[in-house]
Length: 499
Image 1 (cartoon, one colour):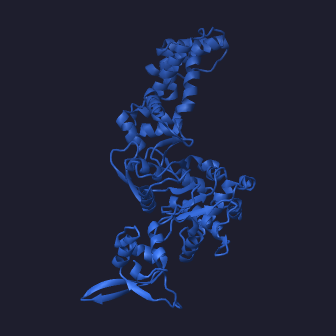
Image 2 (tube, rainbow, N blue to C red):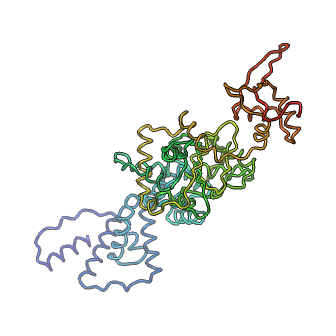
Image 3 (spheres, rainbow, N blue to C red):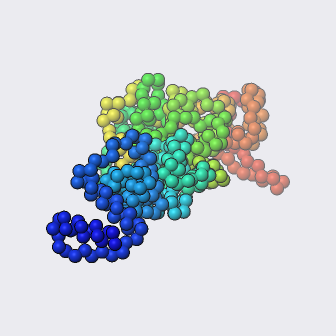
């Protein structure tokens, strides 16, 4: 009744003759009306409360945020803030409205399941935070979040209202509530639908100033460009689940620029996936697995001085397709495919020692100095775009049978000196069809006995591999049901009686 009388009195003062239409009001409605009335008085000239300190305003904002997160609508939150924080209606309205615009999607946030709170917070406040499908780690704008970053993120979530424990935090990172992306695949995907400029690979090959393939006895002028192209396509194929077991090596003198060639090979968007390290047998399996599964290109800046064990280890590493690793934030072990391709440099020429033939290592002789004016002028992004377009068009990354032959013929100068092979050629020649000398058929054991006389010890298996590589023909004979392998040889300036 008092309210009706007050409304009538106001009408008389203003000259309004419209009859009031008053309906019963709830307690909350009365409080809202009273808050509006007080706000109207302040607009009419009543002084607003003096400005509050920064700490008070922070409390005011935190309280308003809490009310909205608890599920209060905007009008109810204004009332609560105005009455509980003892600020004017205008201040409460301004604070709540500004927070509501920011947090309208978070209304009722505190009632959501914890995992959904995590996901909603991440998508709103850290929308660029994603889990890398390469490393399994949380990244933001291409930067891996370290331990301090992760701790700060979880603390901020807790301050906001998502009470995420440390255990749950890492579970949520490895769940559907964290967006995932593949930074390397995403990089190459931007080329889809665009035409690549051609000729970049050829220009890079020319900038090496190589004479490989240009000798009279190994004339393959396409050798350098073909091998470089196969290796580049192989790098892209490895990201798509295939294995690139080609190893590109620049061989040349010091200060020729071969190291900078590889360091400048990657475009800006891929530089963080280029690693300078050595694949050596003394390294742990975990270290090798990490670099092979998280790096696009591994670069060994000086391959000279490697032991036989290191070369054997490199060979097995190039053949390996998957590794068993424990992913970040995970509890168990997983089988992960490798994505790395390898390259390197060396000053030494004698680097090849596989008696079964070379199908992996691509040594290319550089000139005294690479043509860096030409090399630096090549757009490296377009270089990789061209390689990507070739891969998508079905261009192979593995060497064909003819290309393997070309590789072996163009790289004989890089084969390591072999004491056993030299000993064989010191005693024997490979018979020719027109040979008039006596051709003897000897077993590997008999030849090994001859070699021991000149101070060379070997086992029959290694000897057989050398004889085959050197071109000695072999036949099988059966004596008393036992098969024996015989090698056709000509004694070289040595009479058998002298041996």
